[in-house]
Amino acid sequence: MDAGGGARFPAHAGHIRDGSSRTLSRHESAGVQCLTHTRYECSKGSIVVRAPVGDVYRQWLRIEDFPKFMPAVKEVQKLDGGHFAIVISFNGKRHEGVLEIMLRAPERRLAWRALAGVASNYLASGVVSFTSHPNRSTCVMLKICPGFNGPVSHRVHRYLRNLKRFMEHPSNRASENPSPTQ
Image (cartoon, rainbow, N blue to C red; front, side, top):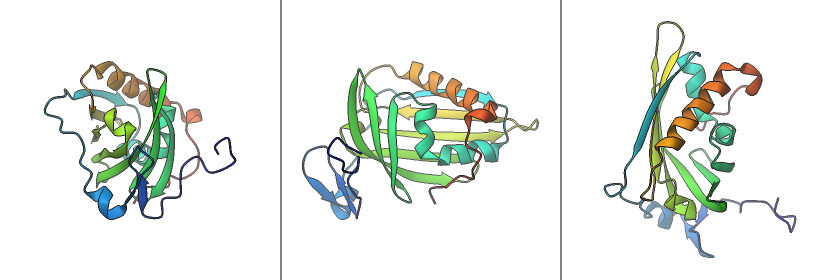
């Protein structure tokens, strides 16, 4: 809720905000392109988590839980099956945008991109891949391509360490079943 008692994010109803006061229709938003990543360096990292691949994959489907292990992500609200309103914070400033899930390969890969809003300048796209290990552990590989030129590798490694801590300590996770974004 905002200070005026209204919802923190506007109702989706097929529209998204482009970071200005203008609202884009679903058709217009489909034409919004992410920043090309050729000029910006993507950061990659991996970690082994002591949890089965299915559990780790389902945790990543809980996009609303990102703030629990990605400190830059402050708020997430599901808009529809593949879109989320997201608030991130960089250098003490809050930025809003829309995150779109582009790919779901169950227990293998999940990819997303920022469609619109100021957040797309900071979190342009990412992919997380999962590889099952025989000892009921999972190798998680994370790649983030920011929409700015600057180092993000320390963030990727911090996010992975936080995820590992979160997954390996069941008291950190909700006991309820996930609400996958399918």
